[in-house]
Length: 487
Ligand code: DUC
Ligand code: ZN
Ligand code: ZN
Image (cartoon, rainbow, N blue to C red):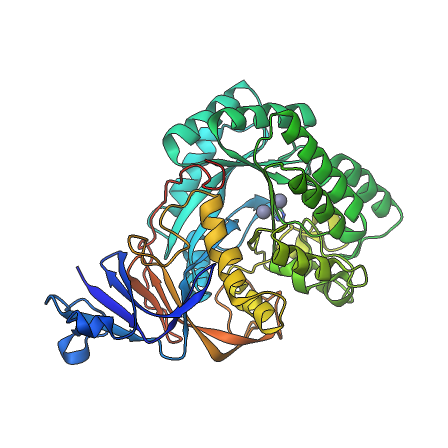
């Protein structure tokens, strides 16, 4: 087994930073060493400077990764992605191969994707289909949540089975998308009660889909067909009302752990905060698009351009303080996690399905490659600390979703490591840094400080200074345990 030493950098965790060297043995972290300790222990660079570590067989020989002047942080953990998601008559354009490769480019070493049961389908079939799509194709490790699009006796039984046997310990329910994924309040309550028994987390897409469908039909009848009407027909009240309802249902079900996904609005955040302050097991994530993008600057661009930013929950107005409140929520832990809700669609043949009818535009934005970069800019802008960057993007998502050995740099943990260059710079755009399988970038023109330098996935270097050196099939399915926040 090869050994490596990530030497000379500043190791940053959720709780602090120190000048340390990280010794990797095979797939795991063997030690975090004080400066000079490696030398004292006789740990020396491999003869010939073998950069791969493959030839480092002697007891004192290691491949050295020079991290001088850099931050050494856990590999990113993105707990909300949709590779190949069937949606609106098409499929999200990243495969597990292209999507996990792009994730690696962005310093991410684990994703948790959503296996799908649509209304009328079988849960176990949906899970089998997701395993078939991912197995042998991933550049980094991956786990699954399960979407439950039809709550009934059979799917409830399947939920328990998935927790007990399949390493799937979280379930996404939808209060939106009637007829596709939607669950009514009674179904939600039953699924929550089931999760209460098994210890699973319920993830909620909190938007009042029944009322939204009425608003959409009325807008279309008035001839309001442009992409921006997507946001106007999904007002913040529809998100906060659904968030409150989900919170109350989780309370009635017995303080069942509830995780609100892709939270976008100040009003919804207030509901989460209130629940947390009274001691409920309620958590929430937001995504980079809700921290940086807006109706005015993106979704309402002239013509059909705004289709690039049609996603649900929708972008909000930049004049209503959502950005400010969400950054604050990240600082105060009312928002515990930043994920991407990576759900990419090309303009050609995909977003274009909604030309002349915004409600037919497939919902989603591709960001899996850029989360670490965009959130590091939050550190530069003094919106969050370096430690909080690590906590919200790596450590908490891993702990919250039972990914043992992920999201930390500690002896015994998986050797998932991102070497981050704080003096570097990243230009994001279709002709710049862009490896997702899309014909545009939702982040075109974004210039951010900092840069991914080296990415190590379970001991294997996958990104080495602007070169992808990983391979499809390296990434393994991770069976997850119960949430470490609750047990
Ligand atoms: N939201 C999106 O934007 N895309 C896929 C599903 C979802 O909930
Ligand atoms: Zn959703
Ligand atoms: Zn999603």
